[in-house]
Length: 395
Image (tube, rainbow, N blue to C red; front, top):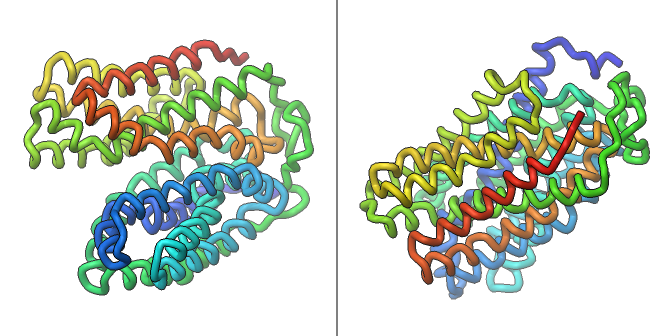
């Protein structure tokens, strides 16, 4: 039972290790496409859209394998699964550095997609719930605080590596970082043992590791949560791909648009700090309801007031997105408990992964047709997510 009741400093160290590994996972895959896609396409004689399509395929592979990856974490623990996953990340990036055409490009990204299925937030959340059970909320928040800087680290480092060594060298360098840093960090996670195990076969209503039994939830709970995660991830990914363009379409200059878009990262971290401090003593459901309205409120102000409200829009969007990332991990724990968390988390996030893969293309079409009025689409999604969260009940 010792691992389930770690001293606070041991838990902090565990969160720091896992959070750093997740940061590397995001920085080396999710955030390299924006930097390397153009050079990669020119080198391979392809359109840049083909590179982005290969990345979308990786996200689809990740969505399909998410439940399986979560089940592996449930059964074998985070240390074994995530350590093996670091090797798959390294292999995928090494393969990407050696591609010579479209077939190799798609194959390499599909291999990276396999690693994404366990290497992003969902795998880390599952590992934490397996370790800490129903008390994992603060640890989940800690992971998101650290990994919130993935773009801050990844974009500049990938840009420098690309300038110095080319895109192939950049991919190889990230593969080496997985082997030399992420792999040792995952190997140093607490080991799985029988007293720690939360078996996927144990019903959510069964007490696990001395945690209070979770209340059984109606079937609609899973559908509502999956809808909330899908809509919020669609908006998050759409904004990540198109926010500077969207700001410019509403009259913001290029330099100002880039500066405003850069506020999203710090706002996400600020939102997570708010969740960790002021909101930690309220229900995760209430926290999610508040956060789900942030993008819609900011977008409405931006459409009504124009350029002067640009800062408010980007900061509210970033802060809300930061808290909703935590909700992706805490809401399933709140409603279903720790039993079988990883497998359930993978299933609940499948729609979000598919939405994430489609978001850049779909929202880009909306901007082309409607200009800044495309924001009404994301506003409607935000309000729909809020309505779904209001429909959820937890005692």
